[in-house]
Length: 331
Image 1 (cartoon, rainbow, N blue to C red):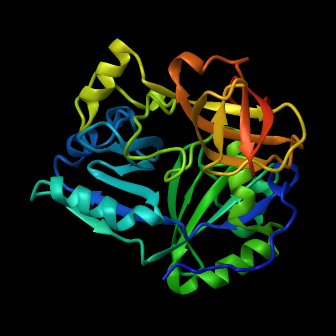
Image 2 (tube, rainbow, N blue to C red):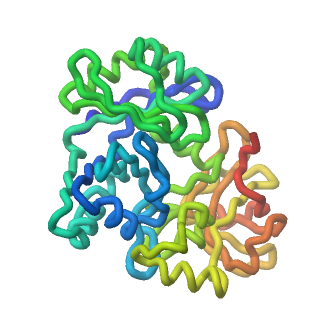
């Protein structure tokens, strides 16, 4: 089973200033092999896998028949007709069942989620940590993947992350997860919880599956058209093509407090200043970097323009806020 780390959260903003390591047992891993696997996966995911070369990965999504998001994921090409797919742990069973239901018989799909522990090391000093962790091994380029062997373990390092900082994700055998976790800490990383990762990804307006992404909303409504190649056929593409032609009914926007108020949270109502309801917050937090409340919400497209004034209803009180251009943190 994936290792769980229940230690005390380090500095909430550790990744922006230093180097944090999170337990990311919230990920699952699939391996896909067989002749035709590339073509099949291209019909299952939104991004164009044909653009991948060996050792590289891309962010993508898997949609239902209506174009709603089942899960967001990263797919890596390990070699000709061999792929490593990293999915959200809460969606492992559903993702696997969906892929199995659409899989040709001559393609092999293996669920390796119980075999791996994943550690995400993020922040400006991540390269220094990796150099001490695995001497003589070169980190792959951004979005790259490298399988290698160290201390008798078959390992995988991916140059990705979900915080807006440089970093890598380190996959090791589940049986040796505690050993590698302790080694990462000994090499200079600070242990952090998922709360830190959540605040950091929201500052960059990275969508969280189950909150900002859902089966009822399309990637276009979420502002993720850049990872959807509408020139190819995949499950759900027709809805996306229609939205591109006719417009999105809603748009996921960034909302920033303009006055002090209690931290915004998932489910809080969003209104226009005159009380007209617009929707509910998908994600919200008191930004540790900006020192103010930030959130995202789906609103009708006609109200999605940056500069639109809104109110976030917190315990019956409207906190003044404004829709801004993404992301919150401008680098």
